[in-house]
Amino acid sequence: MDNIIINREKLNLSSSQEKMIISGWGKAAVAETVVEKIVYLSDGLKISGYLAYPLEKGKYPCIIWNRGGIGSNGAIDSFNAAGIYGQLASWGYCVFASQYRGNAGSEGRDEFGGGDVNDILNLIPAAGEIEQADTSRWGIEGWSRGGMMTYLTLTRSDKFSAAVVSGGIADLRCSSAESRYMRDLYSVGLGNYNKEEYIEKCESRSIINFAEKLSRNTSLLIIHGTADDRVPPHDSLDLSLKLVDLKYPFRLVMLENGDHFLKGHRREVDKMKKEWFDRNLK
Image 1: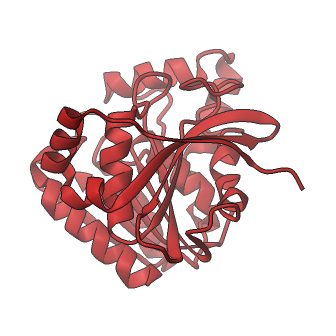
Image 2: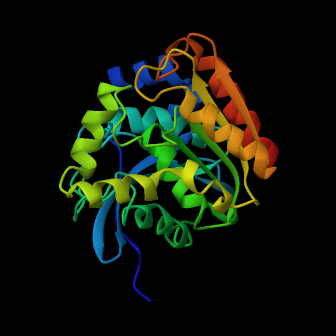
């Protein structure tokens, strides 16, 4: 059987970049982990992504990390990959991430929650090629558009024991005037369709319309800032009401005055995420 991962390359960072990563994500993110760029196959397309794992030999639970944005907006560069994925790996996890099709050198076209969800799902069999990956234990995380991608993934797989969504899109609200940023994002991701197709695509990507399809094997942590001016905070509030009615296992944390990136709550968010993954995956 041919390999799914067709190229691996360790990140090469300058000493000044490493110092900034240590300042932002901690010394262990640099000193105790390996972060690599990868190219892997998804539906016959070559997709760019990342892999991270602890330096110490062993088998580690797997986490898929889903980026936000579309195109260069939200793409993860080597510096941020070393920080974000290095930190997760330093907590004792094998981390996989996709740039999605049509982005960052990946083949194909970004479908904003369509076929590109397969680019996430295809990381699961790819993990079988990684010595450090314990493929019996899976978590998943997503920010913003990555939250939408996480929700969609959880409707198609029951492998994930833990999920964390921060500032996640739960309802695209096709005609909403609430967020110019989101309107711009939709126009790039879904602007090539006619009006009827556009509405259908929006509805089929909004988890609030089919929350009952979420895997009940997954313990879900939803985090949202009350001052988020990109993805409206009530995206998470409205979804939570649905989940309460469905008796779905989840926790909602609304962080006071938190912006879309939760900048003022960095340590608090990191602590919550680590505890959530450790409790459900270790």
